[in-house]
Image (cartoon, rainbow, N blue to C red; front, side, top):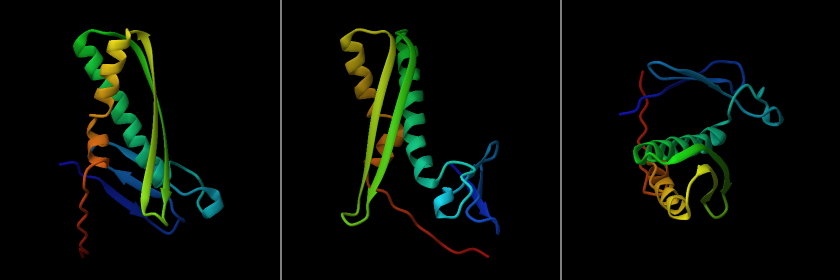
Length: 131
């Protein structure tokens, strides 16, 4: 089970997020009152998809011993509150000596990355107050 802790004090919107071994800062853009000190939460969500896609493709290509030199993933995220729908647009660039069959297989694998699966299946969030 993944576990993350977030904490915010009085400094507007600057949030410290920690795991057992890592720390990062999120913030809101200046135009909404933050200081833009880190990813905003929506960027962080898009980054999770981009990072997972990249790592999944790297692992798969390495296991197959394919000549994949680099993976570049760009993800945009938009939310349509009126339609209550979220839109992710992911563009993948594969750099290396790959044939069309290998590229097609890597596209299938990209759609199988764990974060992609999470985002495209039902999600339940339970919330409770603690003291």
